[in-house]
Image (cartoon, rainbow, N blue to C red; front, side, top):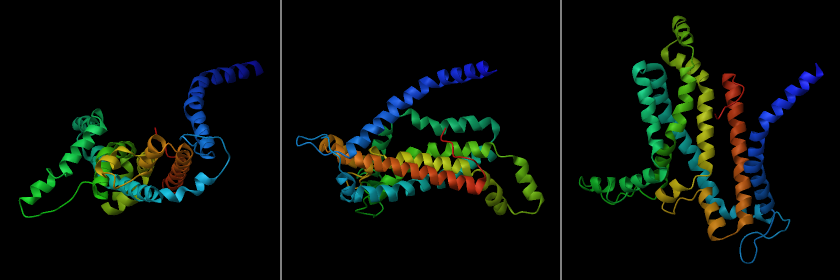
Length: 287
């Protein structure tokens, strides 16, 4: 009996070993290196110099603008995605004809087949001087600037990350037991009450998964603020590129990266607790 249990544990360990090794080599060790860099100093010629100091963390307010923009525009972009994504996911899961559902889902995923860089460049043209502002000038609306603004960045975020918000919400709604909706209606609940009391509540795990996924990706976003913000709307990702590739201040960049990871962990913890409290789900799954 003991030998059988030992063989079972050994087999489990062997099956998990490749995945565990992958995580250690490509996730744990790089993060440990970043933590070590973050308590070091910048070498005179740039890069890392061994030391043990918390000066890099004390200097985080020097990049307060990047942190502020990220912590304001990332949640705003995530919630904007949610406002657009939920009606779409609701229609696909509960209202769309069965024969059209897969086609509509494919149309949502198709933009991922094109590079985000190309799609963002397209929005640069649409929002630039020869795009929408040029069309509006024909009807007398002059000097309207859309590009290089926080609004342009938010628009790019919603366009780029919308599918990542739709799909987890759609999965939650598609698994919804329709008999619960019928029971709510039979008990005299109005459609609005049924939506907030049953549909939204039971789809909350998908909502929190989408919010968490989009928020975490936006915390490190670089491309959209760089192109649609025109260097005037900085995210933490832009600060990291500047510190590692241009200023070559690896310790300060590492301190910002560690802080970014901690913020991401906080986002996941909050998402899990909200989902657990209001829907009874055990956790928010990102897969």
